[in-house]
Length: 353
Image (cartoon, rainbow, N blue to C red; front, side):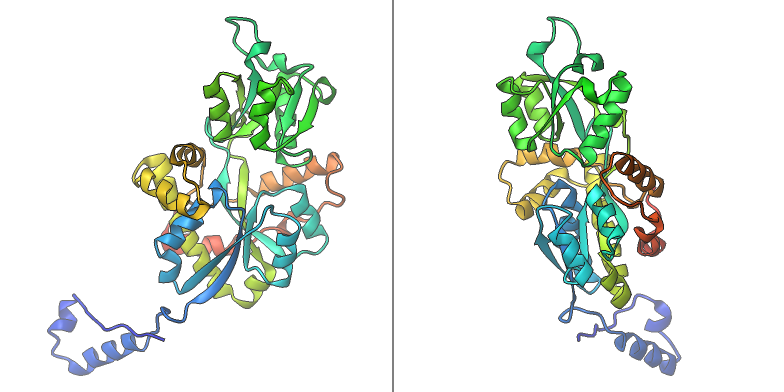
């Protein structure tokens, strides 16, 4: 345990005629410990994607350390399966990912976790696009949603958020499910599939969407924000064990996370921070050498500086997944959400405006 030496600019203490009061104040300050050598470890599951930037920023800039927290980041390939199991047992303190059908099913099955903050959401013109193969368009004719009828559309998953998003697109276009054919493949395979005419259209996130547009193979027919503005794409989870056994550490982690989130938001949105510095910092954690592509991906992130969680959205999405048979049992959403830690951090930092 380390204690800090007092240095005060308060003239009352510097020139006090009350030595006993000064001595009392000094002793009181010296007896207040700060965690430096004895940092409390918090294990956090990350998908090692652009949406994790806020945590990388907070970690690199010492925000967690200043609060007595030592953050260990652990890579998981998805927000389901092994990550859920580790959150339940308390092997993980915090996790991250999208609120997919798997999250609803996990909570229904008794998995002990809570959604505590939002890391990223759909931003206008930034997050994802629907792209149509250019060769399918008549020369000089702009793409239209109705052009998707009868087409093969690539999605990165058959039953997650991308399927929910496609439903919004089809409704806007006046189309039904059987008007299109879905092919499931990773984002990394979609550009090649478009160039080979193996698919006609694709739902692509950044930076993949921009790369395909720049190549001239496909053109944007719609932006995801046209149908789902502000929809949460990545959230922060806490283990019930973490909440129950170490609530103070959970509060401090949230505080540090929000500081990192605000720095990242300022770099991308308000330009108050250096975006190039953020790109370098995040690139180190993600081990990405192509800084230009990384920068496109980071600019695509809309990270709410107050970490807002849209509870109604969670309820609405659950209903859609249930109607489609993607979740077996609906759960009380209040069992899935705990906003107390976020509110506590906002009480200290103040609301971002």
